Length: 372
Image (cartoon, rainbow, N blue to C red; front, top):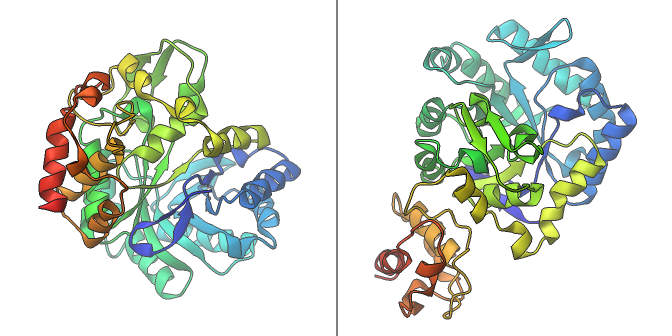
């Protein structure tokens, strides 16, 4: 398993986490087997989105003897009524649901407490009111029931405000192949880096829609970062390709596939042993026309480089550092086996790039920024 730092929390989280949305419904035996198999395979980030008693009881059993190996999250504002999920902004209901979560899981705290599912400006203003849900979250943190605060949503506009507010330590946001060209997405991801906010990428397979056999894929707004869209795909898409794209994006600490059984878990964890060919997603973006001409998507389709430069990584670091060159980014560049200054400007990478990136010019920019 690969581990990455979760922003300013300092927590080291598994690059592939476990979303538990689809563990509402399966038997307790199945839930326990999926969670424990994931942890034994190195998964240490587990997200709990619901407040259903049966769902929490099953996970509580699964966590017995494993809690100290898990970075555990909860969602403040996720409720239920008559067996159905319902978002709530009631302070009383939110606290009641959260305390019930702790009790059923047999733990005294979560590691990240998310302000749950905010996509509109009106809701943002309510959620982030110091006397509202945000105030409750801060009190729970002071009481030791949460270590860090997060924000979850699907809208670039509200997510960006949360990241820039200085209030939250972690953002949970959709990052997937289909949403590559959503306006403002790149700025949002770079803002997470600048503000040292950990980024957890939910819906890496767009809620499973990217894996469907259908050629026409209709993507709802909540799967696309705020914009509904209809896409056509020419070839099958694998979980490995989905995760490869998500984990290649700027600022992403962990991808969070939802797994309903051990077969789906195995399909996600196959990423860890996959070849570069199996991970390659570049042709899919071209099929969807989900890219902006000239923007690097870090797919490394331009390789191999005669000078052994990891072009995708150089471009990723460059994009992050153009807003703020931090000591961490400089250090990450310094340990690269080959630097941008090793570029001989042979142009082979430019010929291979399917997205029209001016690779040579980008290498020159990296030299000026990191080596100047």
